[in-house]
Amino acid sequence: MTTIGVTANAWINELLLGMRLSGLSYRCVQVAPPFGIHFDNARQFAHFHFVTQGPVLLTVGHDHQWLQTGDAVLLPRGGDHHLLSSPDVESRDIEQIDAIPLCDSVSHVDTCRDPIDKREAVHLFSGCMQFDLGGMQPLISMMPTVMHVGTLLSRYPEILPMLEAMAREARLERAGAAGILSRLADVVAASIVRGWVECGCSDIGGWVEALHDPRLGRVIAAIHRAPGHDWTVAEMASAMGSSRSVFAEKFRAALGVSPLGYVTQLRMQLASQWIGEKGLSIEQVADRLGYGSQAAFSRAFKRETGQTPGAVRHPRTASRDDTPTI
Image 1 (cartoon, rainbow, N blue to C red):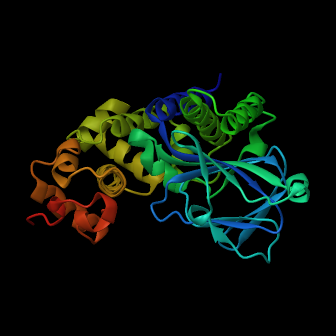
Image 2 (cartoon, one colour; image 1 turned 180 degrees about the vertical axis):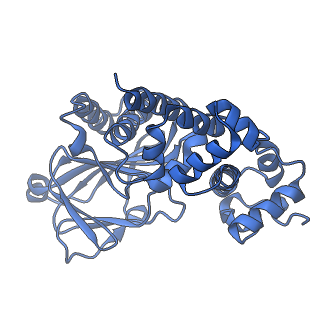
């Protein structure tokens, strides 16, 4: 095995070990043309769509792509998107369409009114998920807006039976279906991310460059494992087995930022996620990231992002610690 292969495997293992996917809601959808479904995702949860009977047009911004029967996509950052029967159809928010609960977090949406509608219906399985890569969370911002499972099926043929099993579970009122669905979704999402990483991570420059140097990759993985550690350039250089000057030069060449700058960026990206999506208090985040006080963390956050930590909190998770002493 080549050096890059060994290093890539180490990165993939690091990534998948830290990955958690928590299913928030799943829907088995049956709709007849013409139809338009809008997914309003202000909190940027991941979305997963599997077409059990198509076709359906996925639109994200100005990008459009047809999904056929058996196609599936993962939108790791979520965002506003539409599933349409044709480009000119107006969309209706999925939350405004009547749904019948099947079990726990799984519901059934059926807008078909007569037998003709049933014959022409499009069937979808959709999930809204919280996508957590642990210390590798910043990698989400580098992922494509839409990750198409179809491009991976030749390499990972085991994905299709899992998708089909998910569709069956969503259709049937069976005990434990929600738990099985969430576990299958976790494995499918892991397979999609693994495939993306193994195929070169698209075009994310520095990360790919880092894979070429196993010693540098080892340091970066260590930083992601312990972002709250009090890292120094000397310690990182020692872990790489080189002088501080050589290490700093290689690091900046690969990732375009200094080692300590990278640590700070990682911490602030994680802080934004933990405060904005998970609802952790500012004090908790400051402690996790190794800051001696809430005030010290808040100063660092504002210096790096231009806003206070409380400003990134979603209204649903707002708490009284949103205005720290700076």
